[in-house]
Image (tube, rainbow, N blue to C red; front, side, top):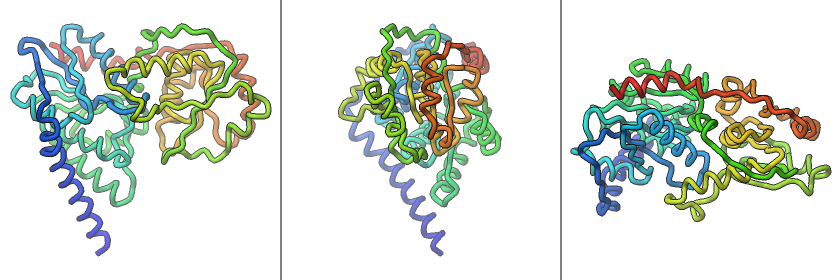
Length: 358
């Protein structure tokens, strides 16, 4: 009886969300003007990050640059997350069947961030005739009722779209997607931010400082106090940092500046310590030595093992090793950079976009 009531409550939540996305969002943004060139071929980027998580903002930026590089004859149109439904309403009679729809990558194909996943469902549901590519994602639906009801809703909507391609950014997500979405094509590539490696130029003077960027949210599992452990030896050389600048400090029109401000701060560090996926990836693309710890799902370890293990300036530690982190700091301080380039690992995505261009 209790389970049945919980499921009913969850389904009512989705009815409310759909009402909000369909009507409230449209009314709130009724003055939104959408000008589309009737004669240009277009690629849309839906759910573009319009909030202060710079990892997500970098995903949107990298996705745009990636598409522009492969499809230079296409107009790329960013659609901010908060304008998803209002934008869909405005373009329903303007989008052409051959226009390509992409949805931002990341780690939000999950009930943890269900409002974002609901927007993704909405795009897939409404744009039935267009090819849709969901860029590299981590998938994670919890085993409780809330997670399983969210998953059922996602499966139902995804499976009905015959031109939907899902891309996983690490092997575990790939296996899960293959199992859950047999009607959809599934690919495996690195996180799209890694594609920036050859195009990012951040020239700064190196310091001897250590950047510390550790989570304080629901994805945190690290229980040891890293700053306290390293403080006796490196107290004058540590700087606490974050990949999230807060909503009040984020301005959509300055999103590129926000990205490069953070990359510059990371690049100048002698070493960066983090348990954030994009903290690790930012170190990869700036060639900054990095010690990384896992979070509470599979995205960091799987990304490291699949794509970055051969990159000697990125080092994944478990918590037990973290208790002796000073030993690893000394090692990383003196490391001779041996790089690896994952750009060729995007070949399947390259081919997919090129094929849609024909």
